[in-house]
Length: 99
Length: 147
Image 1 (cartoon, chains in turn red, cyan):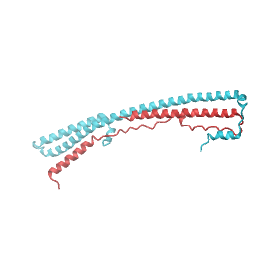
Image 2: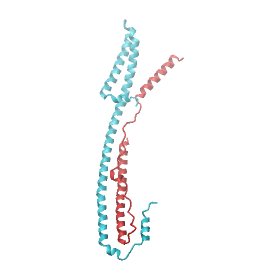
Image 3: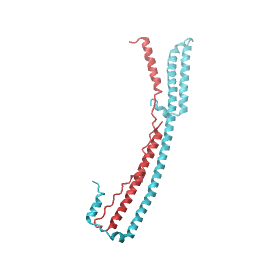
Image 4: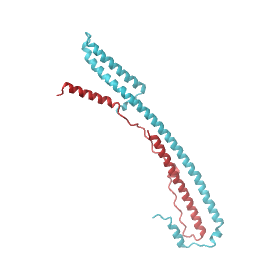
């Protein structure tokens, strides 16, 4: 079917293929787990307090506003810390995975 | 990886085995060449050359693959160290975030309490000139309704 010269070529090619597979490039099987966010920023946000229907004084309004301002500030703080957490972990992931 | 099974064998064993396969292959191959001219053993020359040739080839293959394998192991080790370091830094960042939230929340709650106490103290003065109507309350609450 094949001439002697052709057989020789086939054998040389097969040997080269086998030898070259030993040098095949590989991917390192080490993965980085998705980081866990801190507990406080995972909590359900508090709802704003509505003004009670029986409120009839200006001081009730002011008290209600003050409580709600406090809740907003807590939420703002957690939001800022979410951004900080994201930036930190994004940077760490980049530093770790870049060659 | 084509040589994934090599990861299970210690490095020193691999180096020794690869070298021995190469040496044994070379010795057998050249012995086969010499046996062609030696009476009584010349009938063994072809099997010796064949097996020697195969071992020589396998030895060359393993020696080449071993370099890649060593590089691969070094990369895995380096990557594992980097990941461990990043995970430690991430945990440290989490602790700092928790600390900031804890401290700042206390401050916010104190501020709120102080303002409420101030309102309570000035209640009479605040309520002297103004009274809330039901319509005002409805309008005020509309601002926090989720639609």
